[in-house]
Length: 266
Image (cartoon, rainbow, N blue to C red):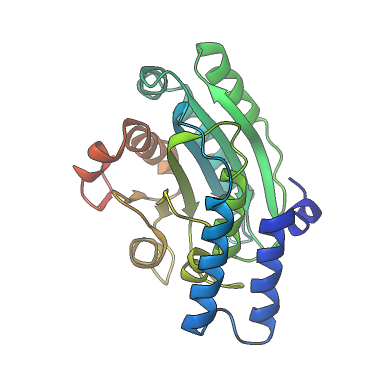
């Protein structure tokens, strides 16, 4: 999805504009009445839409950090890490045990710098999983010079999940990053302005920066039943951490809840 498409995306795009305009005036959802009003409006609109029965087990969108703090080599670690984790035999079997999942991934950095790497695809067969992994590994970087607008990335993820081609029993955002939000509205403002009902947000925090992204993701970012933070001990550990994270997300909430809130196992 292009920057302009995100800005102009009908209902959800207009909601983002409202948040942006309020932010520019220093009034980003500060009043309880405004927040409740926005949430009520969103909820009423969504409830008015048809709600067919769930046809798939899981819709999963991965949000990969592409901010300026990520070097070219570190970006490659992320691409190859996610690609390799998808191709892993344990992950492949987990996907197939559910009868397949809807999968998408995008890179995020600045307020409007979201770059879709893989649009919604149904991963089920060996060929479909391998093709998605290959396309990820070959994906170009969208941007290199923008800061860490995490709230905008979460808003984009909510917009994107609303477009999954069929209803799913579980909807999960898998957001990864090496730092805290330093541009635009925060995660809690995104959760107040965008439709996150029924969505679990998990974090993959890449340890090493100051302020500590692990504590930040645990305290400020994850959301929903069974939500957790997976920890990569640097970008070189990204693939192992992503495999652990995907297995927990694919296997479901009961498995995720059985584990600690974060993990740094090899």
